[in-house]
Image 1 (cartoon, one colour):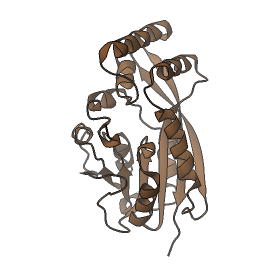
Image 2 (tube, helix red, strand yellow):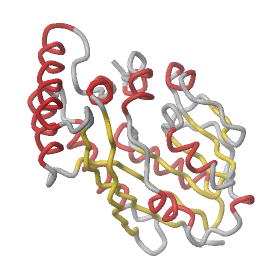
Image 3 (tube, rainbow, N blue to C red):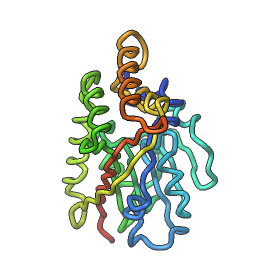
Image 4 (cartoon, rainbow, N blue to C red):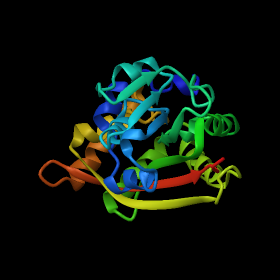
Length: 248
């Protein structure tokens, strides 16, 4: 299965189970860029629009680039978000069309060299790019136990790919003054169904068959052990890495 199709059967769970991003992380994207009403953003690998809508709420215009039709169709409409079928390597945008390019929870799926070339091509002079990830904070006991289950059942090395992709973006030589990194605490409150949706939305965990059933049973038992009033809190770190391109 190609990277662009990995979530075709997981869009509903993606909507139900994926966390949002804290306001401070969105602040870091726009700091110093000027009037939001003048800013155009290309959100690459926009998924079901979680990040696109958060940015649109700041008054910017967002071009949500997503290759997977099921994910696009699951997105909640927003008047400031325009959906486009495209990839990070071939966005379909014209040269120097946008002020900010973002990739939330997606950069590791891209061909890094081609995607970075495309990012630079579509950015206007003095523009900015950013990669944003929610990662588990396993200093929290419930989150650590959930992470152990994920590692037990993972079907590939996606978590390593995420770390490698983040490092590659940060080290890109096209950023005029190097990259900068911001970390913000985040959390997700979930009931048992929410934790199961989160697991089912994870492309490197099984979501059908006997092994998936075993995985889901272990998640139910973990939630029952840690829940208060039927809910658990997943502790997260939101990581933002920003790079600016030169002016002129």
